[in-house]
Image 1 (spheres, rainbow over the protein chains, first blue to last red):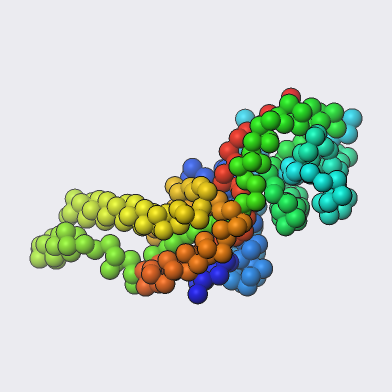
Image 2 (cartoon, each protein chain N blue to C red):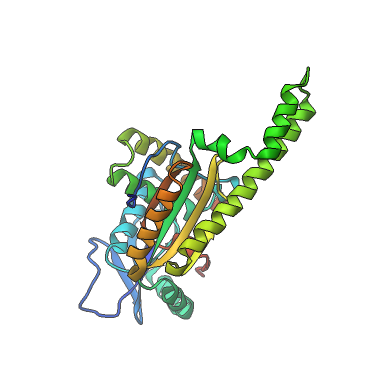
Length: 69
Length: 238
């Protein structure tokens, strides 16, 4: 039985292609997904913190890039 | 002039049912509300700012349909925010019609280690590998050739699974998006816009797919989310 938040997480939470790397909407969505997975106990605090740091870094980078354009 | 940091837009049809968010500023035009916050200085791009942005949108989303605003949007004044709502009112209403009573869920399928080779290696690839095994020396060209065959097979399978899965879910979804943002081991990265009335049926269909593909894929089914993937409109603030 699958429930939202789900199942076995082997790979890192951050899945993206270059094209989506600087998409602020995609990054914000990933952040929210990450929160759901953490709140549902599907990932550890360590995995959560690591993925969150990476997403925040990307979002700040995307924001800076947008402001520079 | 007071600068305002913007979080999201929601609809307010009934004035008695206010969104419960503290220390924020609500700017209304007709039945739409821009949720923002007064800024005393220029916005600081920080981790705290990002997490706060995320939390505010989540809190509103628990209470209402919401149009999330990208992190970092600031209006120069309250008047500018009002003008923005007024100018874009029709377009924003159309967006609300699209996402009304709907949630986004994402589904990510990743090949299991053991399932990958089994799934990918068709007769042609197996035959080519046997042919290579019998060669005295495997050249770079051989490796490239095999790599191409595997890549083609992976892409064909991705398409096959995307078709199978979206076909199974189509009755319970209003829209879907297959993302190109995939890792090499990922078979599908899809987002679905689902009417809240269909959420249970959609969940059941996902469970059915999970059982069907249990030996091949790891499933990540995540939601409910605000409809990030289905709002592509860009609005300018003048």
